[in-house]
Amino acid sequence: MSELALDQPVGAITVGDLRKLMREVTREEKSYYIDEEGCRVFLNEDAYADYLDKQEGKLPSEVRAYFIDEQGYKAFYSDWAPTPEYARELEEARREIAEGKVHAFEDVVKELGLGGDSCTR
Image 1 (cartoon, rainbow, N blue to C red):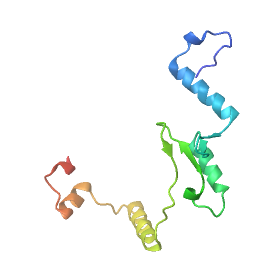
Image 2: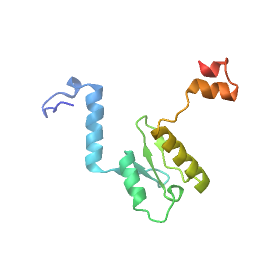
Image 3: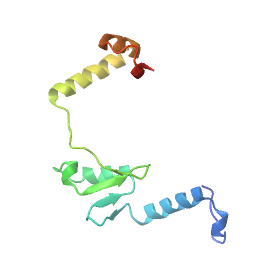
Image 4: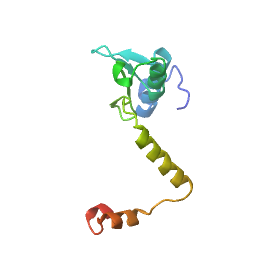
């Protein structure tokens, strides 16, 4: 956003300029507010993540907080953590991808017997 002159009429700015200005003012004032249910509402994910990091020993569901995502929805982190077995499977899959051992989507569809229906289009 270009620097807005203080004597510029409000009607001369775009809705986009106004939106950016509101975000800047809100960030300068406070990174969160308390909603009607007593939860901290963070205005961006980074502030939310920083707050969670400071809540040692607590899972995200134990912290009364969430953030507003880019689309304006309430968002929060899950408590889910992979089991050791699933973590190994994920790591193996990441290693195979890094080594270039990937499977074409079409091959997976054929192997699963899904060929020819709408999920492959």
